[in-house]
Amino acid sequence: MNVWSKLLTALRGGVNEMGETLVGSQVLRVLDQEIRDADLELRKSKEALAEIMAKQKLASERVGKGETKVAEYEQYALKALEAGNEALAKEVAEKIAVLETELANEREQAEGFAASVAQLRKAVTQAEGNIKRLKQQVDTVKATESVQKAQMAVAQRYGGSQAKLHTAVESLERIKQKQAERAAKMEASAELAEMSSAEDALESKLRAAGIVPETTSADSVLARLKEKRQS
Image (cartoon, rainbow, N blue to C red):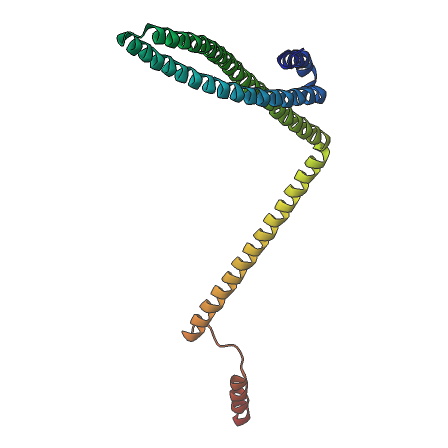
């Protein structure tokens, strides 16, 4: 079974479990391992592709040199024919035949390498796309799993702490009530102090105007005693 078959099998095998148990950790571990294996195979494929591309380049260069060589000897043969040297022209033609045979082999190799490069490039591109999509799916599943676990934990804690939360809210309300009462007392005290201060100021004004008699003082007592003595 190749790596893609294993990946698809693992993914299909995990579908039911995802729906029933929010994705089993075992399925995710299998998928993570398969992705790592696929990445390794992909790197090997790219290395192989690079090697074949290098061979194709060298084969293409040899084809170009072979074509140049054939063209060069064709010119030699033509010149020999122009000079009327049939024997030399034939000898050159034999050389050309050998060169063309070698050239045909080089072309066949270059074409074979080119076909392999095209196939491997297509396979590598598909593999990269498949791995990328699978990674995205696994990441999404992991993120969903984490969020749902967090939601479940919050729900459990909230359900188990309703009584504590209710008690805490009641305590908070009592504290707020006490604070409100304390603030009201402080405001009342301030108002009383302000009223007392206003009354004192008014009494002082009445005394100064002679409307309200002065309260008994040492001077007034002494004056009264002197008057009593004289009488």
